[in-house]
Every structure is written in structure tokens, then in C-alpha cells.
Image 1 (cartoon, rainbow, N blue to C red):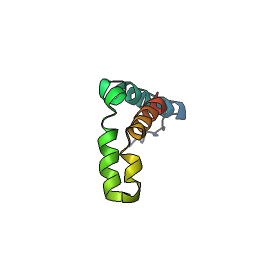
Image 2: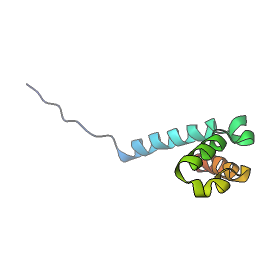
Image 3: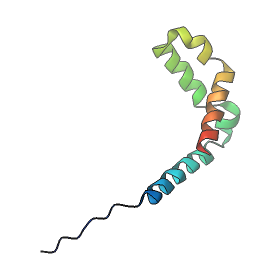
Length: 78
């Protein structure tokens, strides 16, 4: 019986796949909900702050905080 060696993919192939996924995520965040309405981060920050960090709810319910997180995520992905 012949056993074939399994050759792992090269690191550049894996890095390219990760870059493609992050780029696509950034493009997906360029829609109206992320850019203008800052959803789903506005809802997510408000709900999570009320559950996990009640002392910081005042910060995470501010519109500028959701704007910063959503646009920062899009910039990071692109």
C-alpha cells in the first residue's frame, strides 16, 4: 500500500486567504447601515453594556461611540 505525503499549504497561501476574508468583511461594512446608521454596533454596544458593564453604559450608549467602533472596524478590515 502506497502512502502519499501530505504537504501543508505554504504560509503565503494562508495569509492570502485571511486577507481575502478581511477585505470582503470591510467591503460588506460599506453599506448604509454600517456607515450612516452604525448598526449593528449601536444595538450591540447598548445591549452588551447593560448586561456586562453597567458602569460604562453612559459611554457605550453615546452615538459617537457606535460611530467610532463601526467605522474603526471597517477601516481595520480594509
